[in-house]
Image: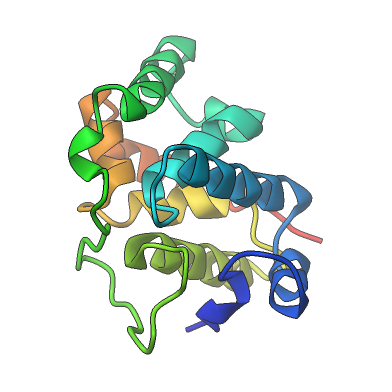
Length: 176
């Protein structure tokens, strides 16, 4: 399991360590997720914030879905988060319990499920002999937690998560 304090947020050595383990695109996704969580008044970055950042940032992530209509439907749900859909999440902590997490103090600014997804992305990248985790690594890790907010959004948008997971398992991205 990776050191979760590496992505606790902010600047400094911990942020630099995380950035060295992510592709530029995934670092952009993480920054966007943090900004979105802050803007929405959420206490923590959750898996839906990460999914939203992935869909907005990476063409390879969008290509993993069944066409532009499915992506548009997903983005529609995610955009509605602060004005309708997703309001039930406001002020709550996402912890699906589906992915084992290290609770030793948690990761400040990250839901347990989002922290576990980042760890899963790093593990997936390393399993594929990449030195940096990429956006498809994170998407695969998000899909691996069937109780996460990201998967709830995917299901609501009629995404077959088993099919998406199988597609992602066939696409091991390289890293530098």
